[in-house]
Length: 263
Image 1 (spheres, rainbow, N blue to C red):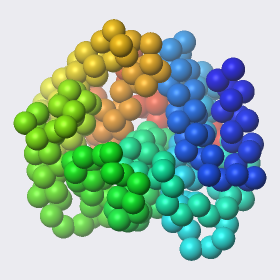
Image 2 (image 1 turned 180 degrees about the vertical axis):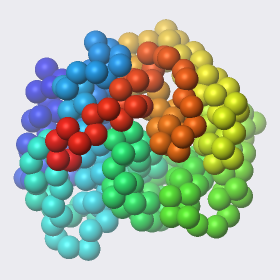
Image 3 (image 1 turned 60 degrees about the vertical axis):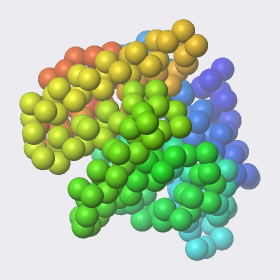
Image 4 (image 1 turned 120 degrees about the horizontal axis):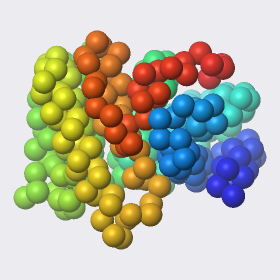
């Protein structure tokens, strides 16, 4: 059913591009769910699902930022013509971070670059429910990828915002948002031991958060998406990533599927 829903949403995007938000959420849920039965992401349908989720996430922002009436996006093995959407309820820091992490995991450099050109002002238009550290984290990642200045200052500001005394939702900030920031900090410093400790801690906190009774059956917890993306950065930079975890699909981390089909 989830597979059918995802495909139906994708196939309907050319008629109604504003369903991109629903498509992003559903395709990411499907990608995560595939890892329940394939925790290493070692079979083709899992990779296919992750690529589809990545393509939809990128399309959200391609359609929101284009200055033309339409934009061409490759999604689920087809080139699709989507109408420009401009700002929408789903164009916010949360959807941007998901799209960015997926592009990093799938090693889509051009898509990462395009995402890093998305203005923070666009994310703020419908991002009222998000805290300032969300915008600070987006700004940090964009600055890093573009090779901009003040990276350290921006990272410190984002980290400070996750302090339990400052955050509106200290549990989510402390267990899900702060850990990838600490991993990123260790990564940019090329601190191998510190990165390893930060990754182990991130996975522990991820497990604590998602095995809490009220969340235990949500697909969002099946993969630690943000730590996985930071681990992919480290892996590709030559830092050893020697953690075996059900939350960190080994084949995605090792980029074994790259080049399997045009993306």
